[in-house]
Length: 79
Image 1 (cartoon, rainbow, N blue to C red):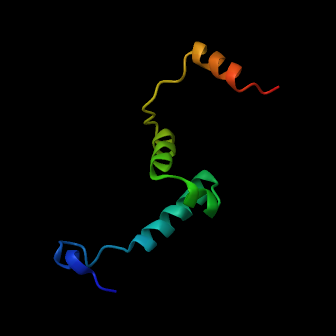
Image 2 (tube, rainbow, N blue to C red):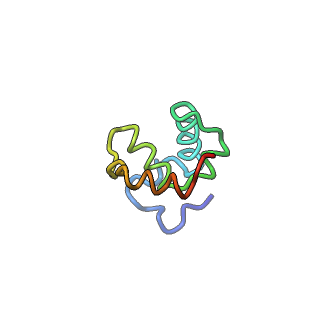
């Protein structure tokens, strides 16, 4: 496989392939998050980053206020 334009970039020749990195990340998602392969491949990078940040204690959003929870409960009743 040709490395193309980036062949001369520092460290590029030694960098693992996308497939290698994706397989490692999918494996970690399976072990740490309990995700099946389909869960991993359907998740967006933003979703995966959010879950990892939350596990790491870097939640960027404040929990919803009681009023927001009540509004959501009205919109999506559990019956």
